[in-house]
Structures are given as C-alpha cells and as structure tokens.
Length: 485
Ligand code: IDC
Image 1 (cartoon, rainbow, N blue to C red):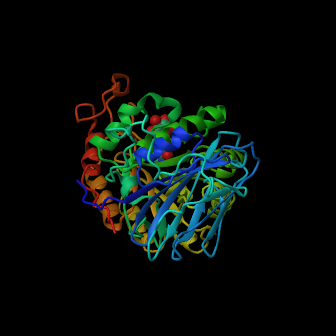
Image 2: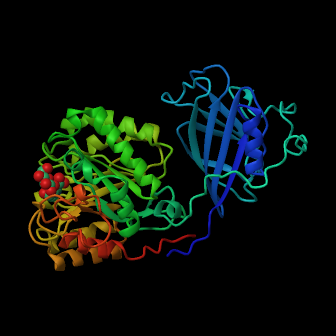
Image 3: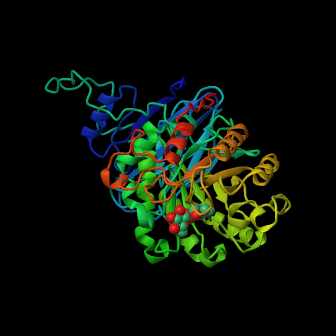
C-alpha cells in the first residue's frame, strides 16, 4: 500500500524497580543499558528520521512521593536539540536538558509514572542519552549498579533464555499517524512531520449522546481498514442532551474514542459541537473546562486535533475570535504542539451564509500559531458561490472542512453526486482535509450506514451502506500517497 522507510526506533530502559526487571529488559533488548536504581526509572524511546526525531520519555518514581519534579539528562551528541516539548517545561543549555513537571503531572507517588515528550533535531548522530536524574537523584545507579552490568555473564544456575520473551512490536509504519506523526500548520497547509502538506480524509461521528452504539472496536476497525480513512471526528454536542448534562461522562467517552483512534493510527478530531445557541460565548466556561481536561489527558499523543467550536451563527467574527483567544491558551498550556481549528461565522461558512466572506478573518485573524479555520458545506445546498469563496480563501487561510454532507443542510434528502464530486475534487486539489457527516446509521440521507446497522455490529463492506456511505467510502479508500521525506 504505502512505500515508506521504517522509522528507526530505539528503546532504552534505564534503571529498574527490581533486578529481575532490569535483567529481563537486557535480555529483550541486548543493546539497552539497564541498571538498578533506587530513585527512578526512565524509558526513552525515539522515532527518528533524517535531521529530526520525536522522543517519548516515561518517568517512574521509585522513591518517596514528590509533588513536583525535574528530570535531567544530557544529549550525547552536540548537535541534538529539543525543538518543542509537551507535558513538561523543557529547557536546554549546551547539551544539558531539563524537563520540569506541569501542575497536573507534578504529583508522582511511589511507583507512579508519567509520560512526557518532545520533538527534537539532530545533525551528526542521534544516540539516546544514557543517564537521567529525577530531582537530582540519579536514575541509573551511577558507577555502582546494584545488579551486574549487562556485560557480566549470568550465574550458571540461570541459563540465558533460548528465545527472547515477547515484546510489544513497533508500529508497522503504515497507518496515517505512523507515517505523518505530529501535524502542524505550515503556511496555509496542514503539514506532516516532514513539513510536507497532506490532506486527511475521514468521517465524523453523529452526536455521541444518540449514536454511542455506533462507535466501538468493530466500527473503528472498519473505518481504518475497510474505508482506509485517516481521520475520525468525535462530535460531542454540548447542548441537546450532550456535554452540559454530564461533563464527566462525555469527557470520558471522548477520551476513550481518542484511544480507539490512536490504536488504529487514525487522527482524532475532538469536536466541541456547539450549534444552538450559535454564540460560542454561551459555552465559554464549559469549553475551558472540557479542553483543559482533554488536552491534559491527551497531551502526549500525536493524533489529536482540537476543534473548539462547531458552527458559530448569529454572532460577529470578533466574538468568535475573542472566544478562540480564550480557549486556545487553555489547550496550549497542556498540549502546546497540537493543531487547533476555529469555527467561522455563519455556521462555519467563512461568513458566506450570513452575507460576509473570508476577508473578515484575513483582516482580523486569531492571534495564535498553528491554527486552522473551519469551512462546512452541504453539497445539495451549497454550490458555486461557496466553492468560489473556498478557492479564494484557500490561498490566504489554512482551511479544514471538519464537516460536510453529500445532501442538503438539513442532513437529509438525496445525495447530490455532481455537487459532492465537484466539492471533493476541489478539496483534493487544494489539499484541504475533510470529515463527512456522518459515520452513523441515523435515519437521514447523510448517514453512511443503513438504519439498524449499529445494532447488527457489522460495519465493513458495502452491503450495510447507504448511497452516501457508498459514495464516501469510494472517495476515502483511494491511496493517500503521503510524502515520507
Ligand atoms: C443534524 C443531524 C440531525 C439532528 C440535528 C440537530 O443530522 O440528526 O437532528 O443536527 O442536532 C450541521 C450541524 C450538524 C447537523 C447537520 C445536518 O453541524 O449538527 O446535524 N448540519 O443538519 N450544520 C449544517 C448541517
């Protein structure tokens, strides 16, 4: 399917809670450097490519409980740099690196662990650091390891294993997230970890409050494998019996779907689905609470994109912008490198449905980096004048079609195949990412599955699909050809 170089992946386990763990790790990964320690154990894993890498660092506290902590290590090569970190405050001076805990992950009980990470760059070579400290205490046992160093022969009573114990296989490297990694906005495009523009194609859930039974392992397997999608939009309505009625329950439901997407290498678009009332300020406090929770919980993942308001309507662009400038910092405090998408005026029509156009955004953009703007359309209702505005705006603003339908704006009616094709051809040409409304079995023309499909539990193949579902599966299944260098 994809031809890509397998990312080089190195594992290093430094320190172990007990000698047996250290020995087991040594047996599994002969090149690792494992020594016992009393204070802490650190796992440092990188995904590296020419000139860059992503490091995932798990810190386990083996000493007394701490309320805040600083991890320290030195890069072995002078050309290694931390570029942007997450889940900690990262600093580098010469080759010395420190990562200071955040408010939400500072407390680490005895035996507790937390995962932090960073994107880095390298020039000469990219070896893993070999020594770590936690609040100044060495995690390695230093020069007096309490278990024999790896070169010491095991005692004769302990024969070396004849076959290595099972290990967690590295990612195969063929899923959308494995290939593209952490995304970021570059110019007007969404770019992958190689800094190259990509287009993500996928499906939106329906309201989680109504169609929870459509989102499970089988349906997400079908989306990833049968549909070959890149993206799953998680539509969490705020009103209409949504988030406002049970913040904790809906937050947990969203997080669990983020995990299911991650397990399949899909990007997860977290949609704070405001609709009525149309003023996002009505939900400002809820948005801050919700996004603080999901961004802290998912900060270390590289598959999450945040959509902070679905379809503002009946409000000015300056109100939407004000909302965005209050919600984005809440996300950035926890997850500084994630892409954030901002809804636009007139049901995310760039203002067109309320008599405006994208100039109001270009002239008064949201003051934040790494953001995109939402455009939505329903193909049977929105045609050439909308397409012309998207084409005009696309050279000036990073756009993301987080929702569209093949039918009318009611979500129902017949598929307009001609207009849908014109739209998707345009989005493909401009490399604008999209999610189709909906991956559900709602009794309406926009739903991909026939009514009753979710109760039946079979999602793959075409026999369960509506006309819209069939149209979308055919569009989404074509190869992505993501750039790999
Ligand atoms: C529609 C659903 C429909 C539901 C209605 C109200 O398809 O079943 O009764 O919402 O909650 C949007 C919205 C999206 C709408 C969709 C179709 O983002 O929530 O879903 N639509 O009307 N904007 C334009 C169209």
